[in-house]
Amino acid sequence: MADLLTATPATASAAPSPRARDRRRARRNTLIGWSFILPNFLGFAVLTLVPVIAAFALSFMEWDSYNPPEWVGLDNFQRLLNDESTKIALRNTAFYALGHVPLTMLAALGLALLLNRKIAGVGFFRAAAFFPYITSMVAVAVVWNMLFHPQFGPVNQFLQFVGVDSPPGWTTSTTWAMPAIILTSVWRDMGYYMVLFLAGLQAIPVEQYEAAKVDGAGTWQRFRAVTLPGLRPVTFLVLILLTVQSFKVFDLVVVMTDGGPGRATLVLSQQIYRRGIIEGEFGYASAISLVLFLLVLVFTLVQFWFNNRRERR
Amino acid sequence: MTTVDTAAAPRARGPLALLRRVALYALLTAAALLILVPFLWMVSASLKRNNDVFTIPIQWIPRDFQWANFTEIWTRVPLATYLGNTVFLSLVITFLQVLTGSFAAYGFAKVRFRGRDTLFMMYVATIAVPWQAYMIPQYIMMQKAELTDTFWSLILLQAFGAFGVFLMRQYYLTIPDELCEAARVDGLSEYGIWARIMLPLSKPALASLALLTFVNTWNDYMGPFIYLTSNDLWTIQLGLRSFVGQFDADYAMIMTGSVLSVLPITIIFLLGQRHFIQGIASSGMKG
Image 1: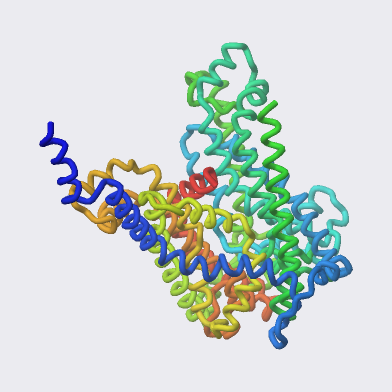
Image 2: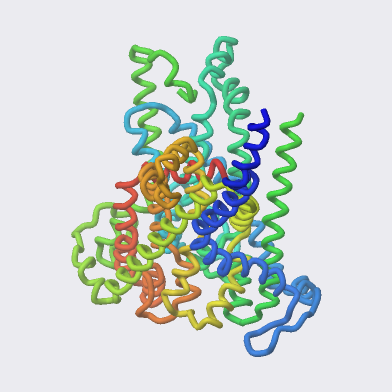
């Protein structure tokens, strides 16, 4: 007994105490962890994190590249409220979102329901639906611009064929340019969201369908009672992604209409680019980007809250 | 036939079932054609004489094939330069993104240390911020560093994205920790585990990330549009866009250029289709 008591401190002094060993291991792990993350983090911190914070600060400053930046408080936002073209850009972006979100969602869901079956050749059809998404925006815009050609384009030829006497002028008309952009973007994006819906459909247990069938539910009832509730998480996700994507619309508009005719399709991202990079008004452009960011944030939060409430009920 | 549970139901027989099957395939084919029609039109127009592009009614099969369009375009625009630049940028950015992304992902998924999760939250949070919202500070930084109108600007801006880290981390989390633990017991260092165990095991995720990054870089318009002003640095997308601006009535030639810009991506897509779809399904679902 006496031996044991004296032996314990002796061994402890020879080897480090468990506490010290833990601390040393923790420090070693921190070093190793950081060494893995650092190569990416350096680039990420300098080129993404810093700009995100800088954008926020810049929106309260007046700065062009020649004069030193100056703190102006809310002046940029006041100016924003009176800037006709920013207001137009905001309205156009909202209009685009109102068309793009529901139409893409319906088309993607329809495609997913149609293609969620184990039949020969389904892989080909899925690939075909997905293909537009991976082609470049420039090629897409160039082709659709020709398809939408007011006089000779195949779209208007088809419309005339089915009896529309004076088909729209599409990208040459202030009223129809935005619908043309929306249609093109729905066509391009639906395959992407179809993939998400397909994954959601495959996550619904087959037993639920069988149980519904045993209970005598028809096709439509099964769709309403099993498919739609089962898809809710994916639908929510798609809704968020689509809304956010809509507010960010940029390259399609730039290559298809460049905001025209006039300012009929000018969108927020383009307005930031024009004011900031072309005209060099860094502060004011950052104020517009803050608005864009807040819009995206608010919609994400609203949808989140809405979904939570529905789930609780 | 509008149900989604055909897999579970015993296959019905008889003429009615056959009829339904034929109807289903007809519907699917019609939908696929409708989706692919712009591409068919593009290919058809690229092989026509300029005057034959917009005919009424549409000539789907060109009257006489103008294969010469595909040789002539190389002399009309410096297409080889554009393609070379695009290939260079796409390869470099993809390589760096996959390398640093999977390396950092290992730190986030398999090494425990204080502050790790806070750090990862920062990554995730910036994914939610639209890049348009911080493109101005990025541009100012590049301008101050005198990197605008060089490939450096695009490489730096696109190679360290948070997306790659995120995608690879999701995949590494599905690989059991016991595997790393066993390797540690065997005396492998953390870097050894990453190189010899994680990388080989995560081939599908690496393929998804590489394909998505390559295609995104190849197709990117806004990056080169903002940063590259010299013609000899232009990518295929900028080249095609400027070609449209210069020769806006040269319909057939524009379509030839479009076909050539889409062709490499089409081949890559056909080869790696599965990885694309998996990458999107996993990153989207868990995002």
